[in-house]
Length: 272
Image 1 (tube, rainbow, N blue to C red):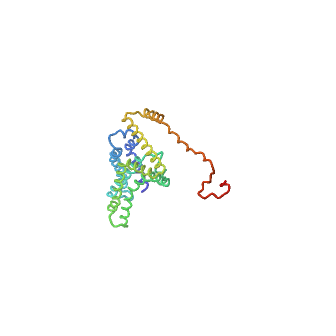
Image 2 (tube, helix red, strand yellow):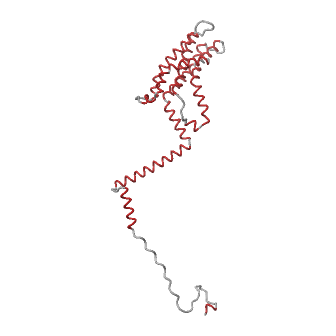
Image 3 (cartoon, rainbow, N blue to C red):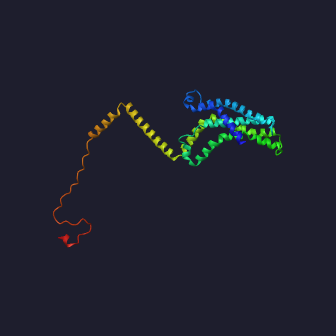
């Protein structure tokens, strides 16, 4: 199962080569009057058709009446699912491209960097292996492990695999939006980015205030430099405040002077 899935995935990489050309030339795709996701989705029918034909060729080999042949109906169903899933894996390999030189999400959460790298390497060929799984259900039904016929058992397993195909197509269509959302989420979680945003917001607010002040001065008929000169001239023309006069102290009256206390004079020195 694993060998067949990997081989069909490698074959489907050739089917996804036109899509790979679009991914490798982002400057050209940005000049088109459509979103990148819409352009990529238009390549998927060709990838699906070529991959499905490759899967049917593998099914034809499996149905050859030599050794233990697979029933034709089961082989045809599994050939379609295997080819489509292998094409989906090739599409994921091509569209995801090379890893970013600066991965903001991995820098903000380093504990998930290793798991992300494993998923990038294992998930695309794993889709090709998933497409071969219906043959295991068909073999279990043939051996009497399960009740339905081999064709019905293989079809039941193929239903969730079709749902995986729709998920891959939606991911190709909205990949850029998903990447932007993840980058914004990583920026929101980073305290350094939050401080940088606050500093930028303060600078923008100060710039707006200065622009509004300059605009109001211009509308008032004064140039900022002329107004500064006028402020300096007014500061020079203002009279300096006069110093407060010092309180005058009257000379002491002649004669006997007593103390300042309200108590009666009782000392001989004061009485003299």
